[in-house]
Image (cartoon, rainbow, N blue to C red; front, side, top):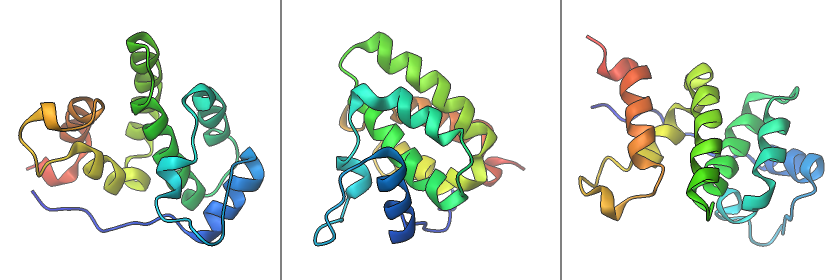
Length: 135
């Protein structure tokens, strides 16, 4: 399986999302910003904002926040609800999020017990959508 091209969250996307969603942004320390800034209780707000008129860089960064907030859901029913919504978005915008999906699939680990909760679902999504797996 060929790994997709790396893609990173841009500073401009961080700035735009910080302003648009009133997120925390510390100029001195923004490493892993997309994984620590989101709040699970705000996942619907993030999904709604994703569906607004934002550019692909913002969509990419925001999806990282969304996936992390889904991962952090405490109730399984909420986890599954938001995951289902997000999987549809990821399928529609697969090219934008190809690297993120690949990352969260945790393909370097065969033991799903050592992966994220979203991993098995995103592996299925990857298999359905990845051109790397098509003959």
